[in-house]
Length: 401
Image (cartoon, rainbow, N blue to C red):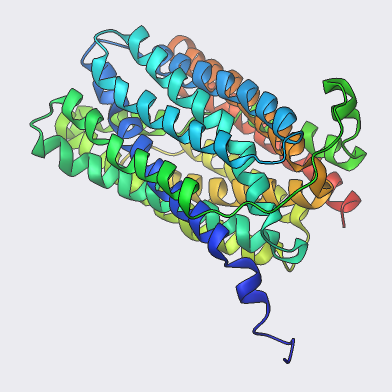
């Protein structure tokens, strides 16, 4: 057989990559329905931006520590997949339980439960994905998974838009419907994904496991952490659009346009996840990641400097979608490249924890700064950290080239 062009395709687009991609699509579809309507649901309780930031931040922070524990623990197991299935089930049930909430702290508890399950499954899913492809195709495999995940994030808000009308804005019914795609995701991991036979790493301490990770990877984590401290949850962009458009368009129309802009954001996210993965297999991943980080700074400056109308907000959401697609694909594929395969669980768990701590800090700080000091101060904080992260990751790019 001629090993020129046909061979790479079956190597990276295999049953496991497809199964993980579809599971990501359905799981994201499930919790993005809840995420899209959460600001409006909280608004019915008279909740401000600080509560939304706190809910996102606490959930992401809890998820990040679950990712670290899961990554460390599962490197020592012969079979990781059953834990991933359990994580998907917990996320589905936690998301559906939003419908039981009657106060903001109930939403916080439900979101935290859902994100705990998400944290448990994330490093396992990434390790299963990396193990199913070759080193030369990490970018495409992770780009495909991110693209499928984001297709779920497109279908989710669109579904929320139509389902809200279909259920007459009865939020408990809407949240209960999220169980359908959420449970389908768990079924796909259980019955479609194939786990390769692996040799568990020796039972060493947590500290020794961290020290076993390469020096270049640790430099990479510093850049990721600095950027992450400014990288707020993009539900705050939905809130921004709603607040800025309500005075001229009215609350109902502003909420509809904000949802539509979030769909636009996720379309660009999906397209650039796959594009970034394709480029990552051909170019320096660190340099590409630096470009993505810099685009985040461009988005933040747009919020500060431009008058906020439908068109400028569309630009903000568009750039936000592009940079997130680049960031998530390139961080994962760069991580897989920097660390030996036997330590991928620990590496992905540590990366996710650094990101989660950054998410906790950024969402909480941006929400508080917005409430107390105004939008320009909140986004200036993020913009400065985005630029610093971009400059730092360039050094890792040179080290890893």
